[in-house]
Image (cartoon, rainbow, N blue to C red; front, side):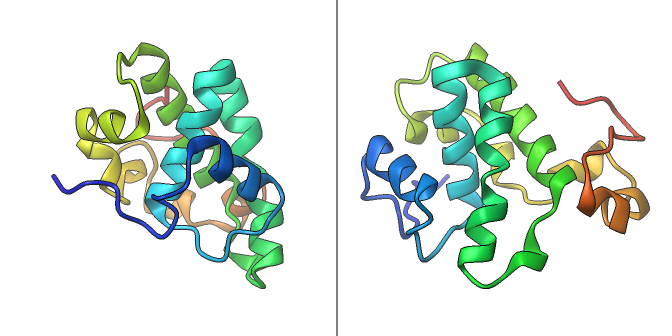
Length: 136
């Protein structure tokens, strides 16, 4: 599996989170979402990952794409990453991603949610528990 090489890969975790929290990142990839949740989870567990992840809404607004924010996707991914991070022996995000290559599958949540529920306006607006398989 390839390394984490996104536009923010050269930033230290501290610099990455600082730029994330101050909404100065100009690009934010799927792997950046994972890295952000991993960094928050390492500091405060799954709850911190969820809280930090919800800041994506502000970043989406700053980048001129407020309609891209999806609360169920945000929370579900943060819960999965937070759960895995809590059990991980990885020393950094690169190693964590190597140990959990399934996280690169952007469709991973369809194992937990039917497409009808996951892509509904209600799921976009607020977190909804899955209808196919529970989240950690």
